[in-house]
Image 1 (spheres, one colour):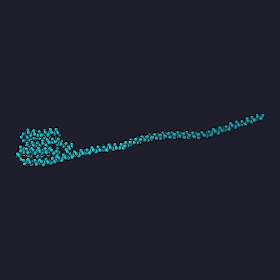
Image 2 (cartoon, helix red, strand yellow):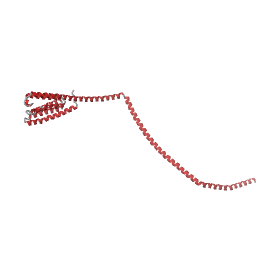
Image 3 (spheres, helix red, strand yellow):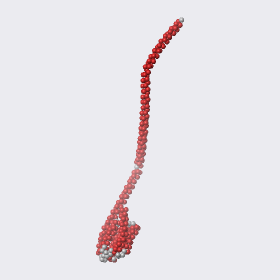
Image 4 (tube, helix red, strand yellow):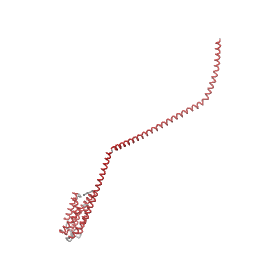
Length: 314
């Protein structure tokens, strides 16, 4: 099972871009070597341009697909073989073989063993064929099958390690992708289970839901009643305060009236005390005058009574 997650895809995309830049960089390197050795630049330039162009077209067509990775592997080995050929007869020609190992190690960044196998096969065929067809393109001094075998053994050792590393990295990415997918599935399953549980509870307990709604309505009504009672209590308190103020005002008015009446009685009493002696004298004078008037009247009455008696006897 081959599972490619976003991290592996990003790594392969970065590797393709880097190796594509290296392939196009090989073009001026091949021209520089040709000009320095003065052994013709047309063929090496065409080979390196062809390899870089093939890799570019494959990358544009299939992105980081398997075919693109295989093309990159073969193109890299072909460019190194071109540099080795350009250095024919030069002391550095043998040293140029180390670039095969470096280029092969770069392919492990694809986390795929197949480009490594393709590169290893390309290098092996290159060495075997040219050792018999064009030995000067490999080593200084002509054909040397023993050296070819030695390089092949070293190449196989490196390829074996790189293949193991690529498989390990690929397996790690696959495991990480699977764990991430399992975690997402578990999270989704948990969400679905929670939703199903809530739905089951809702369907199994409609009465509880109705009671909950009734309790909420009762709570709202109680809150409204409490608010209304608070408003009524406030209104009653304000009314009591107004009535108390009115009672205090009326009490003050009644007290003022009582104080005014007391003042009036005290003034009348003081006035009565002042005029009482004069009244007494007037009373005594009137009584004396009455006595003086009554005595002659009594005498006159007696006189007339006697006269009447005398007339009655005659």
